[in-house]
Image 1 (cartoon, rainbow, N blue to C red):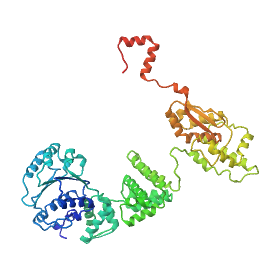
Image 2 (image 1 turned 90 degrees about the vertical axis):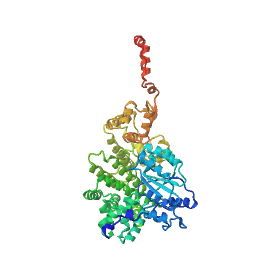
Image 3 (image 1 turned 120 degrees about the vertical axis):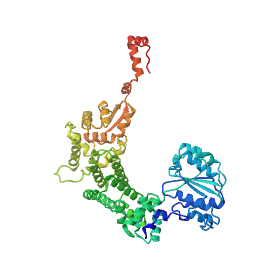
Image 4 (image 1 turned 90 degrees about the horizontal axis):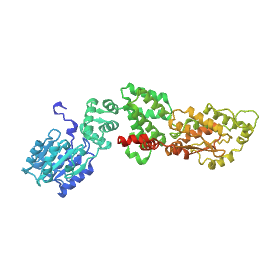
Length: 579
């Protein structure tokens, strides 16, 4: 093709009829119905994202209402003098104003002067004002009267990408049409039509990449299409598209998820290195991974698969990989990517942040989600529950031999604990009890205790109040970073109610709520320390402590005045008051 006659696709394939407008079928149907019934408003506002057809629809609408012989389906005939004048861009009945560069009062006054002149041919004069939100406040005010009471032959069509910037008095005088973003399938279908017209071969995956890159704008999609076509020489492949558009190949993400499923940390790290070596920004990579996981999430159920904006072949790959992941794993993976994105800007070592995120993602496969407040100690204890199973041991009785190690294994977790225990016979007698009766009693006995109590290993060792106090102090010493919990524990010591029920008194309802919320951590630590899973510790506001509250400034002053007459006289002499 001669370079002198080349026309970019965005202009060459600009729609000229309502039928050729892409992705706005409901809106164009409404406009055609209004024309057919003769119910035309004097002012319209077309609003929506860039490149979705606002100005194009305004021009088609203007041509159609002046057409002398419209077709049966409501389109312009393109044969009458009015249509030919419009197509040749010499029509005097259609006036366009770019408010971005003509936004002053004088520009609007010139427009309102033209409104007084009736059309020489045709029935209507149509005034299209593009980017109307750019008009100044004075220009808006100058335009109001004309917009409210125009001549019967005048129709105004305002177009804007930012409806919120148009003053309410203008909005109230217009019929408002909201143009939607064009979907990826609609854009890809239009690009396929352009390829057929231009004799260009293109892979569906390549057109899908271009459609996604356009972000809902048909004009942008055609511009990107021209860019890729220029370097592809008539054959657009998926690889050429992602190379030209600097798009990260989704194959990387499929390989990464396979590494996550296989808990293959080295492979995930190597894929990340390969991506960085290809020049991609790490945050761009993290966002792309999050989008891939999001697509896997919506592909995991038939009801949400319609949210996948891609061709059927690519969608099937997402469905297959999503079937290998549990919903809990997907949600946790998305949360990790989101957290990485939020922390990326403030991270001193951004590469390390991303690598740590990948390591955590590799650890998700096959791991059941744990509550955020659950500490590592109860998990270790649950893992040790099968201890009563037969093990290589000497001849001593099985019950005693298997129960003792459980009690001793828990002891080192509370370092600094006194070694003394109750007499061995009593302890042995309790532990040697059959497992079945202990499990039967558990629901009733542990009802008031923390919900995080282990249920697979029930221990009944006897303990004293002194041993619990020692465990309490050891927890305080070993967890200095749990500021609120440790501060509360320093002021509140467990008081014995019966053999397994203790109680602590705190100063406020806030402390009660905090201790109940974190009970799964500190109560399990106490149970591990004393070797008794029946231990329960209630938290309540103490009557004595509730009297020791912080006084308000006014109460402090009144207290001083009651006990110090001189201070009271000082206030009166200088006429002081408490604000």
